[in-house]
Every structure is written in C-alpha cells, then in structure tokens.
Length: 140
Image 1 (tube, rainbow, N blue to C red):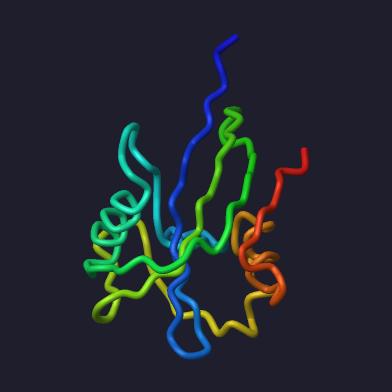
Image 2 (cartoon, rainbow, N blue to C red):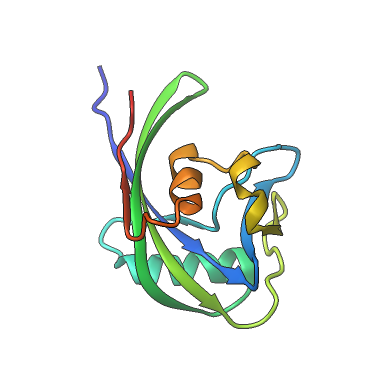
C-alpha cells in the first residue's frame, strides 16, 4: 500500500466589483479559484504569486488569509487529499490565460451559490458572509 500524501494548494480570491475570478479547464464544466500547488520548501506567498504569474500573466499582491479548506477526492482511481490555503489577492492588469488548458472568467458573486466551484466546501465558505476567516473540514 502506498503512503497517502497531502497536497498543499494556494488559492486566490480575486474580486472586481461584484465579480470574482474563477478558472476552468477547457472542456470541463466545473470551476475553481486560481492558484496551484506549493512546492516543497516554497513559502506560501511565493507559491501563489508564482502560480498567478504563470496562469494569468499578472503580478499579484497578497492580502489576508481568507481561510482553509480540507478536501478529498478520487480521480482515475487515485485518492487525493489536499489543504487549500485561500488568500485575498489584488492583481495588476487584466488577467489573460497563459496556459492553453485553462480559461478564466469573471463570475458575478450572486451566481456563486449555484456555480459548480470546487471544492464545494470552498464555494459554500465564500457565500457565507459570516465565515471570514473560514475553516472547512473534509467530510468523508
């Protein structure tokens, strides 16, 4: 049996007026917040700024920790366990996808509760006005 690993993911809540920036893999229907994996030994802030530059082609300024969401899922027979560290972020300029497999869209915040944003616990935390900072545990 292989040892389970926990993936550390840095995610960004980027707002513009009454909209929030979400990412989607081309050909998929679900969305997620921009960001990505934290490399071993990499500071969280550096990881998120790096990921946003790679994905959006913009520079970023981190704000406050918005919350943490623990999440688990199975993909192609492999079980994944992750901790999503979510920060408020400001970006310079208009985001433009720098990766062929990703597209970015501005989602009206009032559509967030009915959008397939993953992990679902993160979507729910973002729609709960009383949940900042938030912590959502993985419900097996």
